[in-house]
Every structure is written in C-alpha cells, then in structure tokens.
Image 1 (cartoon, rainbow, N blue to C red):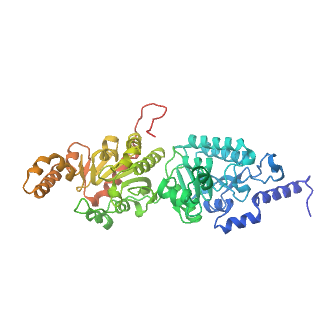
Image 2 (cartoon, one colour):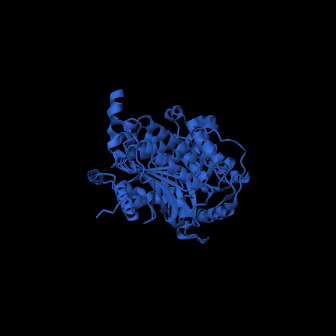
Length: 523
C-alpha cells in the first residue's frame, strides 16, 4: 500500500523511491553491457575506492534542464555523474565518477555544474580530488553550455594545482576537450585495453589526413604510458588502478599546508646486509651498467617504492617511498637505459615530478649517475635546450629538503642539472666511485692530448696511461669535496644512515623565496 504523499510517512516513502531511482539511473541493459566489458559502474568504482560506508553523495537529485531534441522526456537523477566525499584509509577525499550507463556519461550543463561544485568543495576544505573518467564527451544536445562547463572545470584544475592533490582515473573513453582536465591534474592512471584518450579519434584523422590508425594504438593506455607520458601508471585492471590511487594518496598530504601521513616511523642507524650489498654494486668498469633501483630499495623503508611513469623515459626513475615513515620523492638516473643519459622525455618527466614534490612539501632524494645529455639532431631539433632547462628550473625553484647522492658519473652540464649544490640542494653526498668532471676520461683525453696521441709510436698504450691519469686527477669526488660542492664522500653501505640523518636535520628547513606572482618556466 502506497502512503499518502501529503503525510510525513508518505513523504519519507517518496524520498526512498527517489533515492532508489537515483541509484538505478542507468538501465539494466546498459549496466549489463558495462559489466560485459569488464568495467564497473560509477558507484561500484567509488565503493571500491573509499572506505566501506564512508561515501556521502552530493546533488543526487540534480538533473538536466534541456528541452532540445526531446531531452525533456528523459531526465535521470544525477545527470550521469556521481559526486560526493568519503575516506580512504581514514582520510577524507572528494570524488566524482562519470556514469557511462546514463547518456554515455556525456557532460552537459548540470553534469558540469556538479563537478565544478565538488571541485570548489574540495579546494575550500583542503582535501584531495579524485576524478573517475568514463565519458562519451560533451553532450551535443546541450550545445555550448557543455563547452562552457568544461572551461570552468579547467580553470579550477589550474586554481587547485599545487594546493590539493588531483588524481584522474581513466576507466573508459576520454576524448576531445575532456582530455585536458586529466592532463592538468597531478597524476593520471589508465587501464590496459580499457582506457582511451585522444583529441581527435581514428575516424576524424582518417578523414582529414588519410592516416589509418587504431583506437588502441592512437590513444590506448599503453601508448600514453610508454610513448606520450600522459599516463603515470599502466594498470592491468580497474581494481589495480584503484589500488594504485590508494597507494598514491598514502604518500601525499591532503593539501599543501598539511604534512603527508607518517606511517610506521622507526629510527634505526644499524647497518643491514642490504646496506652492505651496496659496497659491491658499482662495477669496476665505468661502462658497465647496474640497476639504480637496488640503491633506491636499500635506502627506503621496507624497500617499498611506488614508481611513477615506469614505462615512459625509463632512463630516469621517479617515484615515492618512505624514510623513517615519512614520504620522500626519488629521482634517479638509470644506467640500464640509454646509459642513464638525460634526454627530452627524461628531463620533462623528472621536472614535473620535482615540482609536484615541491608543491606538496615532500623531500627530494636525487641519485646521480649521468654521463651527460643524449646527443643527436633529433634531440637538438626537438628542443632539448628549452625542454632540458625545465629540470634545471624545477630544482632551482624547489624549496623542500633536497639530498643528492652521486654514485658514479656526473659529467658536464648534466652534473649541474641533477640536484647539484649549485642549484640549491641541501646535502650533497658522493660514493668513492663518483666521477665528477666536465666530461668522461675517454673524450677528455682525445681533446687534451690530440697531438701527443697522433705523434705517439703506441697511441693506445699512451691513451690508456692518460685516461688513468685523468681519472686519478679529475674524475673523482675529491676535487668537488675540496671546494664544498660535495658535503661528504661516504662508503656505499653508509648511504641510508647519511640520508636519514640529513632528512631528520632538514625537517625544519626554511627557504625564503623572493616575492613574485609566479616564475616563467621554459615551457
């Protein structure tokens, strides 16, 4: 029996019906198709992300006001996006989840209003914002108001940048203007063979240019994780993607005025077998590679390292870890890839990460083994000067605690770029295997002793002697240490202890920057 709508009991029953209608806004057939693709619904994704029972929905009864193209005949509650707040590991976040089962998750006026309102709420309350994207794009039937709402979202992305962490999950299509909001957030996560991002799709490209390309190749998760760098993590499933977001949030503060969570804080200066293994890590030959991740794992708590953009520009490694329970960001040259050289992609990847850490008050540890910048016309013509300068700018601007360790090579301008004392690093360390010089011994000898080598009866024997002399005289850490560019030359097994003590001391660091509106990074 239905209660009279004019009674209190009737009004409560009516509310419950409306709430049920809002929760089941998508048709059963649409939900079935979503599940058949291996995808969760918008609400299922939120439930997976937040702590059980913690989600509070906002604007559940909002719906569109359009009467174009028969839109007035279908006005589902929520308008195709679920917005609200909840907790992840007990910490409050704001979250929106686009619902592909309702009008293809297309963004209209009210849909956009809900996201804008949530973004304002997150910024006002200093809480991270997680956006779950699964949308067909702008709602064509609503015309320019859809575009206007996109613009308002972009503006808030910019205003929130560096104030609250913004994370984008791409769990379906994200095309056209919609791609710019995730691009402006701090981190973007995509799912292999599920997520797609592009400005213009395969059909438009074929029509305009005649080029044939598949959707996966053009804008799939692997493309954006390995080629473009737009994706910070390539997940194998939606569960994997959401778990990565949870892990990421655990390293980040709620806002730029808070500290990141301190987890499992313990103080120990005892040298472990893992520490001692570093004494044997560097090969005797400077041309033989090794895995820099072994150094990273040795200095972090429980050897836990959350790598970011692992497939993009693998010649530099970036990611988060903890030392004495406190979040740190790690930037490290990887000798296993391109000998650890810096190229355009590596420079931009590291620069973005350094600025992210600096924005949220996370100390930066830099591990250096860099023979220089990658040579070639491709790099020069594509702007290595300007784009490589981004990394210089990022380090030079950073005011968080910075500790740098040179493990082996630090040649030429790349020495300066990689968190040098000259750019403002607080503590600079070096192993005895460090080679800090204008260039490597081979190249230097060929330039300095060109005439002697050409006149020598046995040039190879002389070259070997000259290389040894150069390495003993210049390619070592002691010349830099004499001048205070290196604060200490340490045994590799002492690395964790030195870095830990440095970070303890730097916790109260104060760096006063000159007054300005903002810098002008070489974009």
